[in-house]
Length: 276
Image (tube, rainbow, N blue to C red; front, side, top):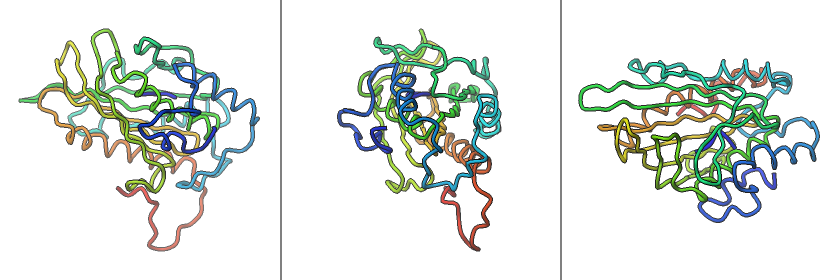
């Protein structure tokens, strides 16, 4: 799990369950330290092209305020997860903070790293009903300064899983048996993002017991990462979690494209590759 956080573009995929040698520096500092060093070395050159979106450089955010506004345009509303979804409290995270996984495999908040222009997490819930317990959901959009820095964030999700297959989210929440499945563009049906990964595991909390299915999905398009997650409860299968996350994730990618894509007419009958 990450919200973050090259030696290569696509390094996160190359390791796929192997050792993450040369991809990250390890630990929670990689988002801020390694990626920022990369940025210092490359300066402020124009972002690398992405294979899935014809990005208009003039539409990319250049300030924290512009990035924060774009994030709010892209993030999913509760209704995207279904008409029975409501806001959880707090609904939005502190935009000045960033989650990091410590050496003790416990998540905590720290100041936003220098390579991140803006990030925001929204929290939702499908209340308990009938034989089903409450399903907790989230969506995250992060704007890095460069595609390489966003790529490092994806690589760190893999590093975190290998370093900490069991992670403490909060004092009363735990995920265990984590396993990441990454796919680069063109792999396993990925025609919609430069990199995509699913993180699967088991979720346990004081409120819902467990273990129950846990799912985190993250994609990278250029300098942007978009993620959705679901923490299971009684009566919810892993397939249910995939179903609930599909439309919000696709919708966020579509809104991001609309914000940053070059205004070039498409040939008649063409598709944008994200029509899942």
